[in-house]
Image (tube, rainbow, N blue to C red):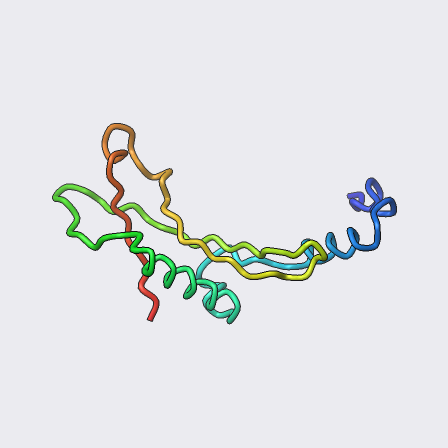
Length: 118
């Protein structure tokens, strides 16, 4: 199999752009909570996200209605960069798995479990 470098080159980019491309392609973002929880910067980002959700009163804790099933949630991790390629911050977002909803059954209200970091 041919290497990608046989087909593309960064020779036309400025040194600043090359540094930026190097930075954003060398950082590995976790795909799963089990990976992220063991890495301090990602664990801190998750705590910050939960704190923000609590401060903004994003949810209410209620009993699940009879016959309803809670849909899941998932963490999404993204590294944010400055223009020079340096890392600005690590961002973690808790998102609802809306793709699990059923048309006509649970589109009007969402019942999702929420992580409580301790």
